[in-house]
Amino acid sequence: MGKKFRVGIIGCGGIANGKHMPALKNTGRVDMVAFCDIIEERAVKAAQEYGTPDAKVYTDYKELLKDDSIEIVHVCTPNRSHSFITIDALEAGKHVMCEKPMAKTYEEAKAMVEAAKRTGKKLTIGYQNRQKPQSLYVKECCDNGELGEIYYARAIALRRRAVPTWGVFLNEYEQGGGPLIDIATHALDMTLWMMNNYEPKMVVGNIFKKLGKQRNTANAWGDWDPEQFTVEDSAFGYVVMKNGAVISVESSWALNIADPDEANVLLCGDKAGADTLHDKVRINYVKNNRQVIECPDFSAGGVAFYDGKKVSPKDLEAQKWLDAIEFDTDPCVTPEQALVVTQILEAIYTSAKTGQPVFFE
Image 1 (cartoon, rainbow, N blue to C red):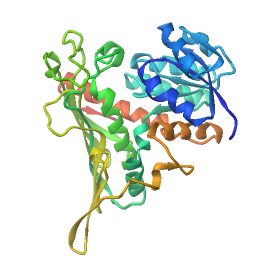
Image 2 (cartoon, rainbow, N blue to C red; image 1 turned 135 degrees about the vertical axis):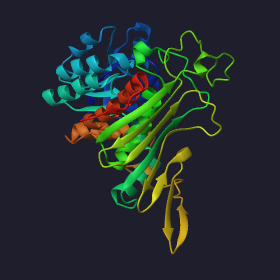
Image 3 (cartoon, rainbow, N blue to C red; image 1 turned 180 degrees about the vertical axis):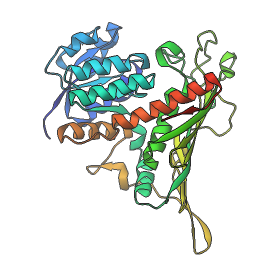
Image 4 (cartoon, one colour; image 1 turned 90 degrees about the horizontal axis):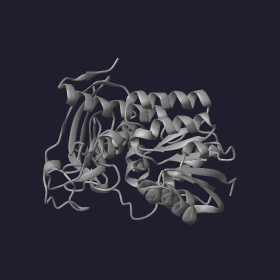
């Protein structure tokens, strides 16, 4: 075991408790020494469960950042505050993992990238779905050239009735949007990463607020309040890349669809195709003049293992993040990659608002 990093958590709500803090704890490589939340009780609870005996609690993140002994900060707040908290943390000399999406806007995300370059500190964004064994397998196929040139893809984040009704998910001011910025961001990140293509040329898209107005919805987490539902309930985009490849971005929290699927991709190349639909993998190609579908077995072995132990995507993400800091390598998700995701998502919202395509330089 190498050195232990001193970590501060800013935002002690659902994503911190469900992902970041347990994943960091499971690495055995950190001491969580500071916890901040505008609701002090949350920070106190997090400190009691995950903190060192002398862990400090804050309600003002700027006070946490004054602690020079803290090396790493995880930003787990609503989307609106991702940018300025991350920039302040970088300026304070901390490495930062910011929960997805990177920011509400492209300009905010761009400022985060510039701050990371200016300070020389590492910045990454929490796209743990890259670390699913299915994702890693397909990525390896892509990198090996097994699919050939990938010219069509679908980034899929479709829920039938699974609208998050807690926190600020339905608040456009705090979040910047609904399923497009919340869950399609994962699928789009995976798609661009697998294609290794970060050069969009044009985007057109639309958003819908249809089912959010309804009641008696059979929602997975109970009915939502239509008066509080200020974001879209579904959104769709069409992205043309500079090399001519196209990506369909599909997202919903509520949609009359019989076969929902979330955080998965479909890729079509000139040698073969691949998809991770329903968290399985199918590679399709032609062999001996026959159409073939190959389905790898993920029940044991393979890329699901890290140092000989099978771990969850969030745990693997945390391990690789700490490796990047300890060994001074690029994080798995670079800020430049996450910036393009935000750029495309913002363009879909802009196209929906204006009714016009958005072109990039």
